[in-house]
Image (cartoon, rainbow, N blue to C red; front, side, top):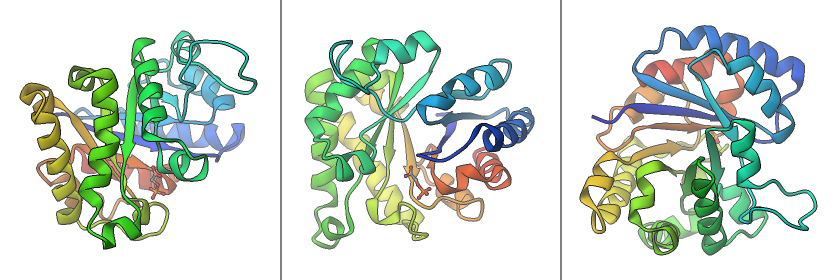
Length: 250
Ligand code: PGA
């Protein structure tokens, strides 16, 4: 039985004062969560605050992006060894906002995934289709291409210490959630695809759903066989809402 995992993706939100309130609520709420793992991925300037606030708590933390190389003349970038050195557990790679706004290709995302893992971080690999792709029945082909790029570079074994997040682009921040059945179908497809390489890795793989998850829809989503938790955007900024989602994983 896979443990549920709920990860908050703050995106480019927060301030020291707001985060302090949110983290305070999260820390105390997390003490009642014994059967779900919880993590928060924050903007780089706030990682120090997470390190300080969460060091004595069960809540893990990490970053939202990483450079694919270890070091070099890449002004403004942050490498995986730096994030590991700092104490991050997780890093998100290939979020649809990175793919679509910043033009990150699946092969670049695969390099970021491999770099994160090599540094000892747990990559959270985001995959998912746009509305246009779903409407043209390309969902499985898109998700397969995004997943296969990582497997081709890092091997299926690499997914033993990684998390996959299925986030249909049309459901992110739109208030429109995939139905539990729609999400389950893609999660099962992802697991099957990995099983084609390694059945044991596929069985243990934690696959999160992301896209307008809220306290109200989390219980039904999380009850599906292949949905192992959530990657939460907007609702991760509201303590009560985020904790309600976490409790749905209990
Ligand atoms: P949302 O974002 O929960 O606000 O839809 C999810 C995400 O982008 O990770």
